Length: 281
Image (cartoon, rainbow, N blue to C red):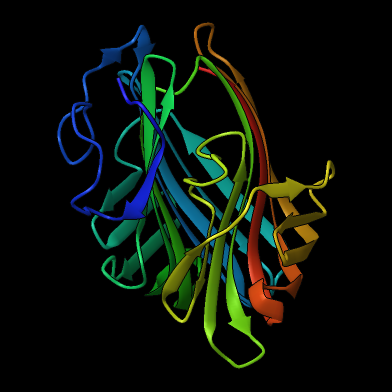
């Protein structure tokens, strides 16, 4: 059993021992809880924003993709409960779904990957967040094809969080007033220990831990210490599921951010998501 929360660079010598952590295999069941695993890749920019994800709860699988075409003002999305539509591998993401294709390539070694492990009773949860990763690729819907050249957020998570878990989350990328690439990952409800959380601000590839995050009830703003961002919603992904033993209710709006980063640095442009999620899993 994990004794205390942990945060550090990915694969650092001081990471916890005695509990199963990736890349080792995690048992299907531990502490009376099913194993959860997911990878989420978000690419946010001025022309379009998109996300691709794979979620596994025990033996069940869910795959999803979404494209918010800011130029056309159209949201395209789909969630499927079968393999083959979404493929995720180190440094790559791919979608093949009818007339929709997405191809992404990114450098996972860039920036400062942050690893967090949090105890939850006899269980524990693990995550690695990567921010402001340069990403290139293409997406196509029917005859409309666009190139991608921007910044990505990558979320890898696994473990045995509580049966009932709810959180609010924000992830975004952009540039500060000096033109440096920035990214942030903010959360309240999971991996949110005051001193060893997944909350991170990346500026020009360097990551720093942030204090506890405060989200507006309507997801119109988020702050953490001297970071204070306002959010303008543009398009919303929503989904509610009741699969008996697993239930989920979430909304994830795409939009733009404005405001102040740490140390008084202003955000010149910011794109990303807010999220509210309640799960019984």
